[in-house]
Length: 83
Image 1 (cartoon, rainbow, N blue to C red):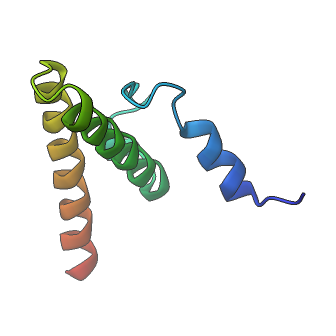
Image 2: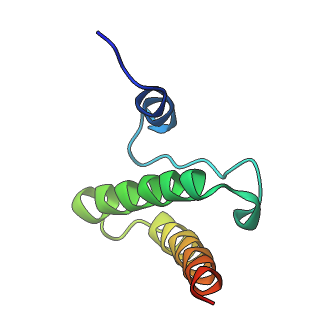
């Protein structure tokens, strides 16, 4: 079976535990667009997991804050690209 490099890289970023999201190795502003998008996906999956299985989990506060930071970075990049 032949897979593309993007498929291989994306499979490597999927955590084994859907609720585990590691901090990126670099600050958000230093991540590539691709890395930022992947990190956002991981956060969204983890939030969805906790919303379904443990809606009162304290970790949700941190995950949602981190997601908000990612969204703000993406919004800043979009605003700069439109300028």
